[in-house]
Length: 227
Image (cartoon, rainbow, N blue to C red; front, top):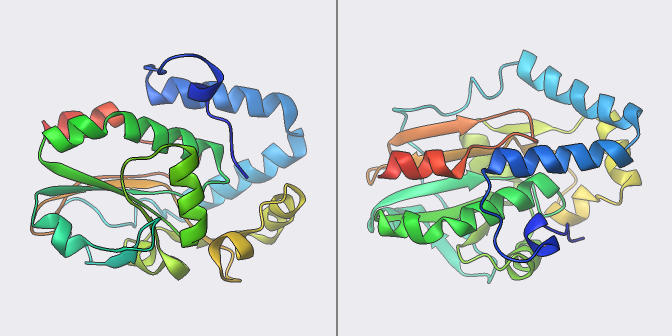
């Protein structure tokens, strides 16, 4: 599955703030997705918020766990090695099947030169398999490592993981979003979207997690923090 990006749909690079791009995407989805389906997604988000999943996730000042994960080419990427070069930006996302994730990854891709100019590295992490990560990096021309976090082991240490409820599983199945195939396990678990900036010793300097998959941190805010 490949979601056609707004950047692909129109000539040139979409320089609008990510929140505007996502709002447009949400508006278009609302025109074609049945109201009952949208209500299920809204209930799941509300339930996650009521349990304070984002609030309980790793916060500023905490020490981030180290990790070694395969990238989209199957090469192992180590947080320890990346942090020897400078600060590290981590973006946890759900998968290439999610249009909001695709838009966010393309937006982060556009600011990659500025992230690197600030002496930092960028990696994205999802539970999808290496093959799915390869397809995503290739199709969206991503120039940073897309890491596969099998079983959400790293995301779990950041406090981001939840199990997709049965009624939402049924919706995904009808839409051919086969998470057991995409993620390579039967858990039906996903991370909530989150972005972190780690200092060279692994301390969390910036944290943004949100139970609402249609809302993402603004890339410009990450850049302002790095500057």
